[in-house]
Amino acid sequence: MAGQPKTPFYIVLVLVVVALVALAIKRWDVLAPQGNANKAGRIDPGELGQKAPLGKPGAETATVALGKAESTDNATPPVTTVKEYKFKPAERLPEIKGTSAYKPMENNTVRFALNVWAGWGPIILANNGFKPEKVWKTPDGEEFRVELVLIDDPGAMIGAYAAGQVHIGWGTLDMVPLFIDGMVDRTGKPKDSRVMPRIYQQIDWSNGGDGIVVREDVKTVADLRDKKLVLAQNSPSQYFALNMLVAGGVQPSEVNMIYTNTAFEAAAAFASQKDISGAVSWSPDIYNLAKAKGNRMLVNTQTANKLIADVWFARADFAKDHPGIIEGLVRGIFDAMEEMKKPEQKAACSKLMAAGYNIPADDAMAMFGDAHNTNWAENFQFFLNQNNPTNFERVWRQAYYLYRQIGTIQNSPMRFDQVMDFSVIQKLGNEEKYKSQKDEYQIQLAPKTVGEIRAESDEILTNTVVIHFFPNDWNLHKKITREVDGKSVEEPYDPNVDNVLEGVAKLIGQFGAARVVIEGHTDSSQRGQVPVELVKELSMNRANAVREALVQKFNIEPNRLMVDGLGWDRPADLKNPFDQAKNRRVEIKVYPAEKQ
Figure 1: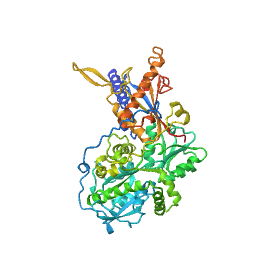
Figure 2 (figure 1 turned 45 degrees about the vertical axis):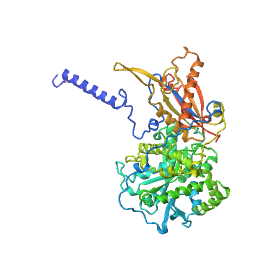
Figure 3 (figure 1 turned 90 degrees about the vertical axis):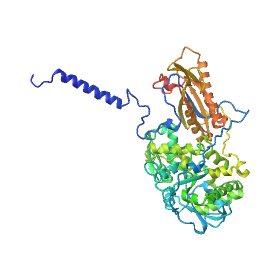
Figure 4 (figure 1 turned 180 degrees about the vertical axis):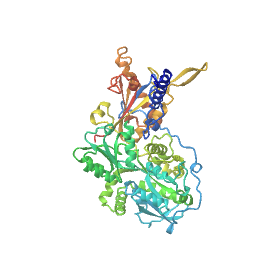
């Protein structure tokens, strides 16, 4: 028939269709999976050091859960592994260009911004209140004064700081990358080096001041999936929520986030709107909400007590011009922390806080439980110990990664060593007054069995990690020999194991007052061929290997870590119980130290 396509036409048509289908499949990542290609906004726990890639033959998974591991270790204390940074801060910090642009000090008075927070108690006590009346001295004897300027709104604070109206700013360390994003160009280069922050001292860890309150039907972090969670955006509340969700295996995109301007507004929304399943807020609101019928506390910073760190930072130009004042501030704050151990000094501080914050004295005294002030020894661990799983560098990198993945930070990140200045902390370590101090934030928990922990309270979250074990072996650093170009080459069976352990240590470190259970799981490929007891013994040995590595390298208290070997009893996915790659795993389960 005239006009009817010929055979070659159909051949070409088929080839075109096949090519288009192949292209679509490739783009859909079905036949050619792109292992490193994340969906926009998706957070990869592996980037936080919490999960290794799946799929290597012979891989076994271990599960870590917060609780007591095995029996009490009464023999020797854990080995403290301290590895100090060797660089000098002055070699890494950005060069300061131009004439100093901050407001000149009147009567040699430093303007130090702070917010309504218990952690500022030491400087309020050291200054005898907010007014610039007390005379401070630098190490060289130069006199200066301090005016404490209450600016509760972080946006207003950073505006005053950038304009040079205050010389010192406040923030949680996770907030500082948000501040910096407005100070740098797309490449991460400072627009004005004079305003870049220099962080010299950690003031505290939040110790119950932040938390997530939920409805009774939300038992674990994973239960927040597909539910509404209200919180203040670009705040410690958001950082807290992101960490809890990712650690619990939930993508932020899987939760319906409702944003408010402040944490207090988030609490009010949760109280008035029953369709909201959870709220991230601050004390005292979180505790008042948790007492209401139908609500419960899911997790707070009494349990996740090394996650939110409060710091102060100086303008770079001010710090360059007045190094003696910077050192004087650090010394004065540390000394006041020691003074506040005396009941009469703590009471005096509460009165000064009440006057400055314009709140009742009883409320000011009650605030002290919300924060743990960090002495010199704890600052040393935070700033200088590379092996500390919750140190400055790790918090900094994690904050940047999380905020960049959700699109809050747009510009290239600034390295931690271009902000962190530990020179004063390091100098004070040469003085007996400071170097004799001990880390006082080590939580001691009474020994409990795995059964007691599970029976006492619901887990907060489960974090699944993959460690590739050699078949029938539990050596984390097993080496094997392969033939490469006709030569025998020795290489690690799992080259990523140290990264996985660091991620686990970070998670456990953040939950410094929680119990952790490390569960070992195997696949069921040998079911019916080997004794069940042998499989459980293997999974227990692997969980124990993870525990011992965490204790030895990261100085984690061994009595906090319980282990359990479950063999093949609990498949990872009940809908697909024979997915052996998923079944070979380690799970980290986090439990509150006490029933909440």
